[in-house]
Length: 410
Image (cartoon, rainbow, N blue to C red; front, side, top):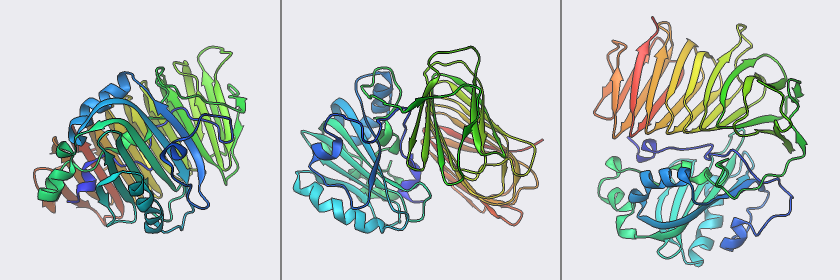
């Protein structure tokens, strides 16, 4: 098993529930502070900083010992869009030497795959993380994350990798790469919007756009339908439902934290990114074949996620959860791909008996419960693989310090 499979990887990797408007006046950015140039053609998507708070404390208590981090003051993050066909290695080669010239030492790198991850450290300055999406991704980006603090390199995870790469804990979790944009009330992120979210009114999305919806401390019931509009209904009238911003081809809806959301209707014909901090999400699809997402990504911090009667026929879909349980109930499995990763909690996965799928399950410091009765093709303490039918859909399940439970529908 590859080391990379044991850790949270994000498209996003990123956990963001508030960001800064591109072009708005703001303090000196992360890249300027690092003395690094912007890759040619790249554009800033979002940037922010997370200061002291319970969320930061929880993440660092879980991963700090693995990274040798201590005396952490804050975490800053910047994400940039990247041309879909740009060579990942060229992007890495553009930044690697410049980073080292500024006094950072390489701690870890994974250049084997087209998705590149690298970690650098400076004992007195903290840790620097770079993640580059593979070519061809629809929302392709690269992420810089800096942890401001001190680091003891003798305790960092790369020491394990050199001696036993397959059994190591992997590079730092990608969740940290996005915490600078969380809606945690103690964050110092400022978000400037172009408009307020219209309540109980359709919000038009041309097919060329992407929809990015952010919720904090709200219990969300959402449904995906064959439509080209999004709509948010609140339980009671509010003067501040949230902020709407169009950034190029991306429409961002940042719902006011703790808003009483009655229902959210989402379009099926555009890529969807749903981000949650606390609260919960229950997501369903409509009854018609076209009521299924083109591409779905869900990122959660401390918010349980439930997919109910979800049809997996095509497309690439991802769920990443830190500290929130995930329950996935698939109604149809005929093609496409679904990658689900849970840290610190349980993942329950229910398959229809007629599924056509190849399933890979991994557990780091946890366990895998296979209740399907299907004999695995491969099996070990932390990995299991089996096939159903023709194996057309690709299913990947990961638990970090948690459990994976796989069942068949009744």
